[in-house]
Image 1: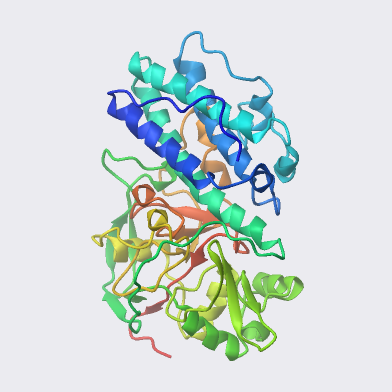
Image 2: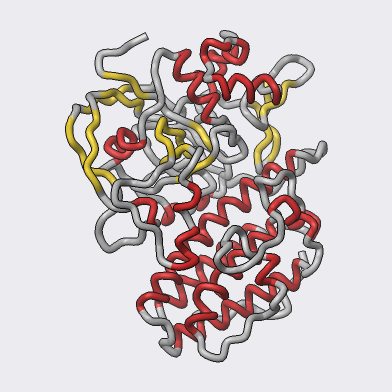
Length: 424
């Protein structure tokens, strides 16, 4: 990979600058082994090239922090305002999402230089105390935005590499002993009026607020996500060929797109299943959480199992008080690992039964940043818990991820719930 023209700026004494540079460096580390060709690949409109992610996250800091907060700052290149805007219509125009893979210029080297220049400007602004409290909050938002794109770099690159018949390897897996998972257990929770959503002084996206009351009926929830072994039983019982298990849109998606297994699963000539991972093609591990399934597949499995998906309120209440422990991107496994105990976080994002909608009293952020979450609250479903590609510090009990129900390229899995007293 081409070397940047400028070295990354050195951290100053400011804790804010050190943390900023640490998170920015984590992004660079994820692309350190990529060639310019790797970094430009775009396999579908929903995914973006790694080079674009590197530039867009930089554009965010330049547009929302430096432009209003650093007197005399001049943007690195006016054309970048158009090329690397994602969906902020109130800020300016943008290059079509499906054509991001055609942005051959600027080069990867120039994008890395762009990152270095903006990093230096941010560190300088912090060192001179130019950012008021409002802009420091925007800077914090930008860091969490950067961490979101760290995960997207991995999931988008995985989808791109899978299109190559050579099945190239992104990275060597970190060597770690893995305990075998035990059988799934059910946790019982009582009905009642509960409070969910974020409150307090810690960071949260606007869609996690306000904390509010909601009623949940008594329910049971599995202590871990559904495993590959359990999902294979669904497949072997004809799950993909039984329309009575599927909602109408899901059945249409599965049949028209030829779904017969989770994404990245392939069958060899001898009938054995294998899966493509960021660390190479491997045999299935029945104890791992099943990943890369759509909401449609998760819902069909739950119906087959005589259960259902939990609502996001049920998931959050079950997760409250549980440690944020699991397999995150820091493990460098880049793949789900078997659960060995009660686990609510890491490995796979978990589909819920809840539509992505505003909480009662929701108010989007002011200005252009109001487009960050609120305008997507339509036709998508909520996922919870983080995945093996998520930075651990980015995960919270109240975190609301969201995707369309047919999305499969994320590390998406699910756990089961059922009404109290229900059984198969």
